[in-house]
Length: 370
Image (cartoon, rainbow, N blue to C red; front, side, top):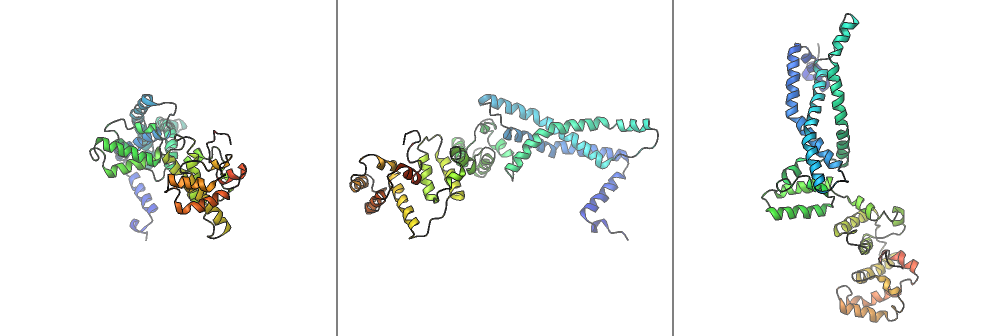
């Protein structure tokens, strides 16, 4: 007794279904093939074509264009590429359905007759090759996008929410951190009414999408801002806690606010804390004491100026009077009860520049001579 199809495996049930379909008259199978292709073209294939078109613009952004030139290209590409991609997907679907419903049947007879029947399928096969060639590049581009931002965000969030006031392609001009995109979307909502066009939930989806496809990751910002000058090995030769790295990043930001914006510094700090920073040494140990003395100076002094001022001639002639004067100016940064500890930390600092710079990298602007 043969097992029931309902009791067999899914693959066996599919095979049984295909066998039954292939047993239908060829005219019925042809009509089914036409109906399925048309249904897919106006339904899922249109969605896939839309995804391919938007994804190609998003991932393969033409950096050599800017402003209205880019917007014009994006609009033109979208409205031209989408129907082309849809047609190519329809051709591939038609061919696949043909392989499924109307498999090739060996035809006996003369070789000329067999060649004639075979030639009838050549136009479809050639058209399918052309369609696959057209889909190859956008398919590869979107494959990279899919892997890079998995799980992928839906494309319609920007199209539906950002096109009320300007081209949905305008955000493609910029690559920003997540914090910057949050400010941008918030400003757009405030300008046009908080819930007039974009609800709070939709704004969160837009921010997620923009952060995925037009955002710098913490690792990328770290590489772009820090590893362009330092190798990763160089940054790990000295153990530093997350708090000490925070001070170093702030000092690096003294070079220019354009190279180290606040949101970018936050990204670098997060990356360093997660991947480079070490745990504080055991409390009471010699290393812990040295770290606390370094942090004491950075908490008190780096808020206003470089610690390296002590290297100037005569700067340390009267350290206690100097620290007391700073405490009068800003008792929050230099609390009166911490004057003795700060003076002790200052007096313990090395006076040779090489040792000093190892303790406090980026304590002065790189443009200045040391």
